[in-house]
Image 1: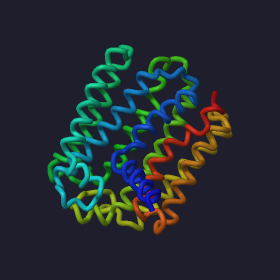
Image 2 (image 1 turned 120 degrees about the vertical axis):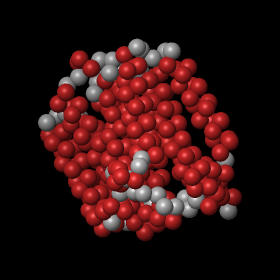
Image 3 (image 1 turned 135 degrees about the vertical axis):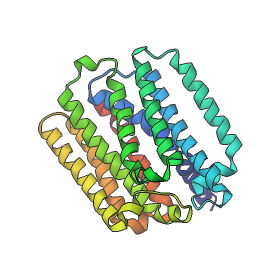
Image 4 (image 1 turned 60 degrees about the vertical axis):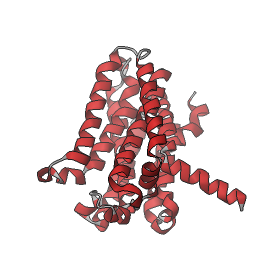
Amino acid sequence: MKRSYLYLSIYNFINTYSVFVAVGSLSSYLFFSKLLDIKPNYIVATGLSIGLWVIYTFDHLLDGLRLGDKASSTRHREHFLKLKQITRLVIIGLASLIGLSFWVPFIYYNYIVFLCVLTLIHFLINYNLSIRFVVLRYFKEVFIAFVVTIGFVITPVLELHSSIDMNQLIYVFMLFYFINLSNLLIFSYFDNELDKKDNITTIVHFFGLVKLRGLIYSGIALSFIILTISYMNEEINEVSFYVFLSMQVTLMGIIIFPSFFGTNERYRFFGDLIYLYPIAIFPFLC
């Protein structure tokens, strides 16, 4: 009984506080560095991990403040109830990013500003957009997937961009974009009922569940086609092929078996877990 309670507590903590987001961003950065044959900058990797966690957490804090303790989502409710504690962690995270910035090569500065602007655009769309442009909120998953893909795939190549195979970079970017997009659409698909209760606008409200499910299948299928072409053109190696394939199989499994993965937000746990898959194959990439 105690073991089950401990397991559930750890599980809920990981889901609620975006633990896999932070660890997964570090894992993915190192994976793409190796895939693109770039020596990783561990200070940049750490900054990317902390920065992404801060953005996700700040987003949840805003939702928590707006919805209060009656939020339908455990994640939003927890961020409201523990507002002060989590805010302190966000401030520590921001302070850490400022500290790390002194050790980051100058070439990253404009890029960081660019990512910050994209993040600001996301928050403006999500929270302050006038009713005339509210339709843009329906497609926030498309925008977020694009920004996340830039962060994971483009960040590793900044210092040595002149030596990068652009064909390989384009293939990898498109492949990972559709994986990210499919994952975010899956989250919206399963969060539909809770979002309705909390009056949160998502892409589900625009397409409906049936069409959204079709979009998810299409996104996974497109990513698989790009993966196959990339592998056949030797843009990625065999080990990397199976990493991406494992991500796609996981996402396909989630959407095929909604009853199982819809219980206790398993879809979120396994959806975030795919970004940790590269950890398992690091020894084979070295």
